[in-house]
Image 1 (cartoon, one colour):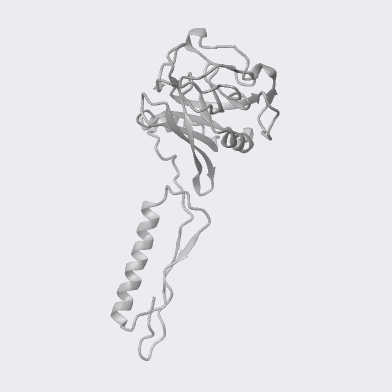
Image 2: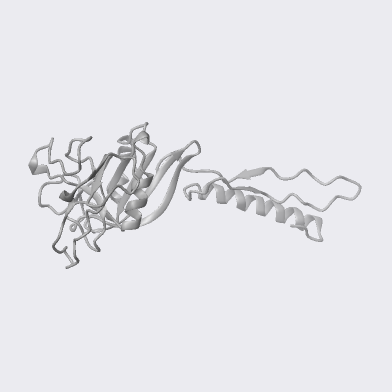
Length: 258
């Protein structure tokens, strides 16, 4: 910006450059990508002298090196090989409402995808899931297998297209459950990775529950799974790449900050 007064011009340029630098420092979790700003350098020319050099470029191509919202214990459970994380953050320990974001790690850090609305279990979250507690298990789990009543929508995960994913009845709020398992991704909690989501092997024992999936949302709480709208579920299936060792990080916000 050029003003009619040299002193005002300098103060304006300095203030704007400082504001841009502050925006970089406080906004590094905003997922901005491949954007660069140049602070104005068009100061008035001094009498008898050349115009000053342009202000240095301030890069906004920044992303957090650590996933936002995670504490040291939770972060330590994520393998260094993992470069895709579906983060599901519950509204509260006893809430069935959550949000999901797919993060992808690049050379500049973790970049966040779109925030998707989600549901989790009827009674919220637990660190010690057992059969019938109606809570989703808190933790970090690999995502290795998918399937559904409908055909493969384009995922690179092994996909089991089977009539065994049929479901009917109603949910906790009276909503129909039909179509909930049209597309699913198995969450590797108490299951054998590398098998169909329909496989009922339970390494921790039957009492610790199982069959915890990411599946199509039916408009209400689940019994232990995470659910997403159908279009978001299909987008997730197409995005997840087994070569990137994808995991799901799931729990209420307070639990994930540990």
